[in-house]
Image (cartoon, rainbow, N blue to C red; front, side, top):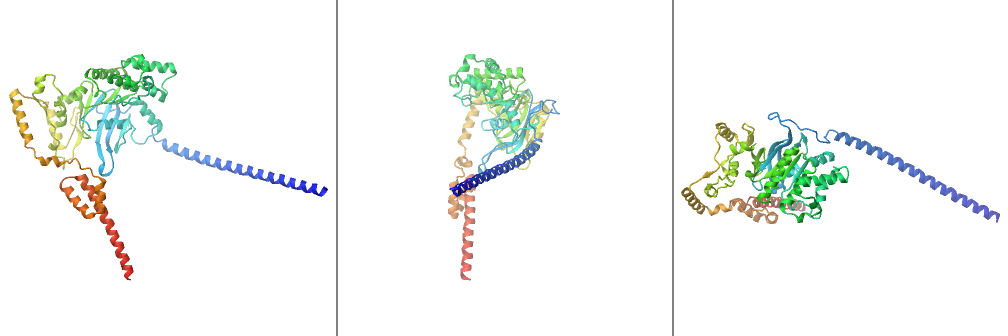
Length: 485
């Protein structure tokens, strides 16, 4: 019995020692893991410090003032420098904006005017960092805001640049009340001290845009188009930005409502020193609210000048065509008016490439060396280029009959000069790859008939098909040679 008790005691002591050893090993393992984690933490801290040192060279906030233009002595708030904006890739790439450059001074209204699809909205969306740039840069107060910037600077840009969109119905959240829509920016940037301060700011801006306090509890679908645009304007102004990008804010509104929105923008400009990039396609509207006007055609800035300077001396033919399109209040005169039509083929840029140049009086025009000299001569002479021609009733009738005869003589073959079905479909590349002879035929046919996108697709498929076919034949010959040897 005594031997059995001693044996049991020895076993129990051995078990206790084993458990203690295991606990010690576990503790040692934990200590080693802690040391490893400390080493990793130190390494991460060093990497973070290095990253912070790299980012110290980049600006993290916007300065109080922008650079001064040496020619005018005005503060430059926004600077567009040689920007290109491209959509799509490869053969399907479309360059919407080409080498555009202009400055916007603090406190002014700069209007960007052009036909639909000319690139006006594309530039506006690039300013608020929605559209990326393919080349060039955008500076705000001398600081680059295009491309990759740090998060703090990005928030400063959002805080200082706001946009009023073209379609008031699509730009408002239908599931949110007006109170929340207007307050969203205040919430995101914590621009109020307490709830009472937020309510006061919202009610004040609602009063300024001509809405009632009872409208704050309603939803966007309960308002008219003009009232919705006022809500969008209030949402932008309540942030107290320095720059507003107004993307055709009046194009979908009635004439009387247009005047109200324009008066609101003018009021905010006078009371708050607001700077505005106003985008429109109607020169008659922007003349009375703009300090300077830029005219854009198919991605090219063709003319920039002060409002009255542009209307008194429209030098570029496209600007003259826009001015001629402005309706005349007198119905008889409007009926006998002959529009000035812009024809891009009048320019010969095959050798002497055009650029935007200052011809004096802070008036910039797009053209080559020969055209710039002609524009300078016209401006120095002080003669206003003729944009509108008014005919008598007899002259108008004769002009209309001649125009009808010219239209009847139009060569029908010119209809296919720019084919509608020139899509460059992948189908043509695939067929040309499988059947290189057919691809070669398509290649020639499309090129002859000016289907250039289809021609490129067939050409690409044929070339790849020939390369693959040649590689297969080469491999077969090498295999055949080894078999004979």
